[in-house]
Length: 302
Length: 274
Image (cartoon, rainbow over all chains, first blue to last red; front, top):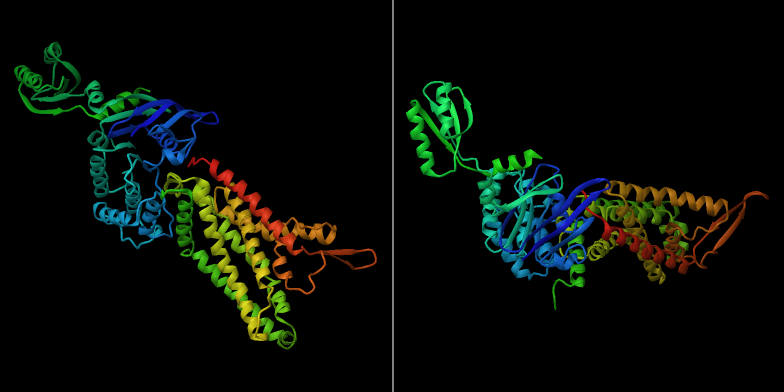
């Protein structure tokens, strides 16, 4: 399984939607594709699935150029881009059978998988027409269609946007399960979801890849481990001097000081001990590093 | 045998598209429309000309039954089924369900087109079959020219549907594709035919709406002359052109071939920008 982008650009007349995007993933796992609205995330996924042709560069899925040989390249790929709409007059079961049969799967296998996903994805009644379903129900039907062919590569475009918490949970659990033996590439706005499910992450803005790497490495790099200490009285110059002499103060307001640290428990204990020597402490709160801080640092700068 | 071969995928595309078409409100509405027009024409003809009709024969009856509305029915049906043939895939979110599958787009298109052709033929055939019933009722038989007429009917629908399918590849919106097809086939083509044919004396044989009339002209004995000149006054002449049967077939086939190539080229190259 492999997704490979080599110097891919996509232009719409003068507007550069993608600018020399390159990455390569070839192992099971989940890759989060992050960026603000208009960053070029959906364009990337469309180029990846041959819905758009790149202006420059090559896109390969499992070693096959998707824009030159789309049928071969898309064989091992399941994708859910934007909000796909199966033909509205088809029933749920027909929509799923349609995709299964197109991909050459036995009818008995298709039926077995439909039964399996009916429960696992809480699909709507199989004889209901697609046009009558809610967005969440339709997304689940489309997700089932993505999974029925058992693809190596799963491409998802903000799969949980606009879904209720129950539906989000279904998707999240599925991604965690899928990434064990498949390559899952998905764009998302929900950073907690990405940090919870992804192994790798790519940050994109204005069509350019700004940063990519392992989720834990990036969050460590943009370390935001901090302790917030509330003293019994307002912090005066003397207290501030003592704090600054030993620690990296991020913020001071009234009687609260926020101190950045490495994240090690020993250091946290030492900060608390020192603070209590300066003045009585009435409350204490620690925050860990997260992807959100990395997101803001990387994308906020640009 | 690999199950994802092009021919299998064509059959699957056809099967599910047909399933989708026959469940649409448009299919049901057009069936009712075709049935209503055919019954109305039959009832009125029987009521006004029953004694005259009884003296005629099956071929003459079929010609007079089909000639008033046959072209219009084919054009309306083809516009409704062909006018959004491609735009439902490229202009709606169905693109994200269908076009990301490992299937060649022309295979998908051919499956869809065949389903649209059969759906259209069913509706037009309803109109035609009421004529057959009328003929049986009046004469107890049916002219042996129905085979030739049906072949022309099928080709006429196929060519017109492909023309509408071409419009659906040009326009992103399904509604615009359908409206453009109806306007061009019902208004523009007849106006060109009248101006060129009746007034200028130029044979509008290249218009598919003109070619389609061979489907009922075939019932006339003898087959009408290709060009009829009428003198309205000593100085003013009008012309009536009738396509020959084989001319009708050729034109319908040409529309089918030319517009299928164009539609497939556009569909295959179309990018989904959203």
